[in-house]
Image 1 (cartoon, rainbow, N blue to C red):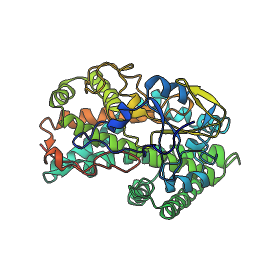
Image 2 (cartoon, helix red, strand yellow):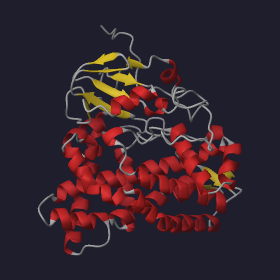
Image 3 (tube, rainbow, N blue to C red):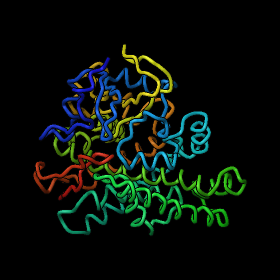
Image 4 (cartoon, helix red, strand yellow):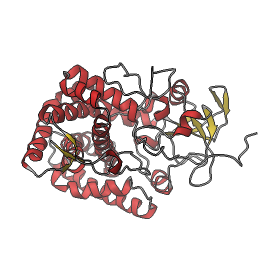
Length: 400
């Protein structure tokens, strides 16, 4: 019987002065234990690499947020995810069918074909940086607009409307959750995308929403609402995560000058390796991977009952010494592609190929074209998104 009187709260704060490391309690505690969430529920926390992979690959656990026992991140996620299920809240066979609709759009071949376009966007943003004042905020000037421009082009969303959807995205991933505002913002974005689907069904272009409008909406296979919900997931996840990773990765390299020099002076292969290592080292998803047991199962020798919530901690899995040598050291030359920053199993991130290309282009372009890029403020003055869904720096003042 688990003693529920001495259960730590989750998430746990990072240690002062260690902004790139997981909370120390996560790495020193038991590999599988109970934690207490914002609503008083006490799901299981799984922290070891092998156990996390086993859990995420097990068909006996699900992502359906409407199931009793699901460990919701906050009031916003509970309100949204039970009201509007996206690809991330669907179990098989619905998840399999919907994911299959998008697989061809996110193949490695398709993502690499986008590389020249992403490179042009990155170069134009650096041109603007060079023409502008110093210091500059790298978040607003580069990290946020790069993935925003890319996902808009991929989906066929007018970039002129970026202020609208970025405002909505900020509401959905804000530090202090407000369920009412989040649901209203989500519905506002859905209405916008539904209108866009109608327009693209009449006059399709060469983009993902146009394809879905023609192949799914015109044929009656999917409603405007269903396509809009899918589009919202891709828009929000497709720009906020990569934006956070670009800026946080640069901040981490600033803190490790020898690794920054290796990235700046290395070729494409070294930069690709650096991206994987930064993904492993930083693991920006604060919410981790949340599941609920659909049947009784055993993970790491612990029995998890049907209906119990489980949180797989990717950040500690990626710092597990059983999987990575000297895991708390940032080493951009090491082989770490087996990390779980993008998850594992059937719900592994669909857009990981796009994220990899964007990050490779972003880091290589910044340090190639701005070889003297440096922080414009001391590291202790940087503010981090401690309570946000996606961890990162709020601002990153830089000079060159």
